[in-house]
Amino acid sequence: MENRGYPLKLMITGASGLLGSKLCELAIRRKHEVYAAYNQHTPLHGTPIRFDISNKDAVEKTFDDTKPEAVVHAAALTNVDKCETDKELAWKINVEGTENIAKSCSRHDAFLIYISTDYVFNGEEGTYKETDKPAPINNYGLTKLRGEEFIGELTQEYCIARASVIYGSIPATGKINFALWLQDKLERRNEAKIVTDQWNSPTLNTNLANMTLEVLERKLTGIFHLAGATRLSRYEFAKSLAEIFGLDTNLIIPVSSKEIPWTAKRPRDSSLNVEKAQQTLRNKPLSVEQALEKMKKEIR
Image 1 (tube, rainbow, N blue to C red):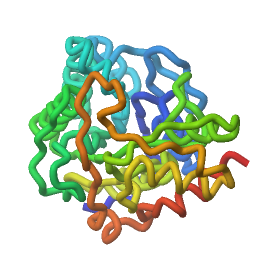
Image 2: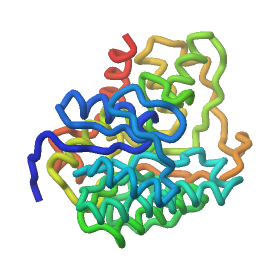
Image 3: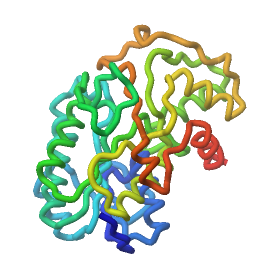
Image 4: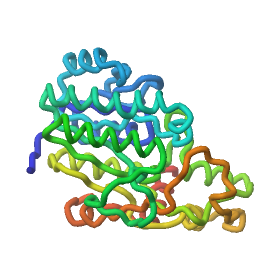
């Protein structure tokens, strides 16, 4: 179903996060009316609206006040270890919060895009297609999958957009992403221990935001893997970043994931197959080289 409706009355949850802030910025540039929903950190772009997604009454009231035509639900507890140690909080935000957003979207006939994750898969196969069966191995992946299921049950017009290791040129809400953390470490000439045995599809937030907005504007439904186009290990990604940024690759020390004291289990290979997005979208998933070059320009 194609719908070139402009401009849209758009609500973006998690609007001060790494993806949310970029979505708000680009949506405003595309002349959409943007309600930037947040709970703790005031967003940089859009009309800020503060509410707690896990509070059903607050969600309903906000929807009644703003009457969005479309919603990108990017708010989540994404700290994988925190989701493991505080399962109640993870459930409250990632499951109940998503259920509340889905119900309000349904009530207002608002098109919904839910930002999900590669961690809904167990990581035994890798290069997962949209049709592959999810089987999460940690609580973060489980709560995000429950969120996906609620979206499917409660809304008619929706898209589930799965991404993988989102990074970008500007830190969001006081959190530094993997790429910026690594760049900082290497620029200070500090060694960085990076795992060689964990594969995914690192996704530049700008690329993800552009793909998400196209899905929104064209009202594409179903599941889309909107991730970077290159499958690579954390170690290979780190080497690529160092090379493109002209930093010393010898400071990157290869380690096994057994040496990292994580609380939650990580999928070994949660990389995503992005053929559907490549064939459907005008904004294509970027290769790791294209994405890192873009990030480098953004930092300049």
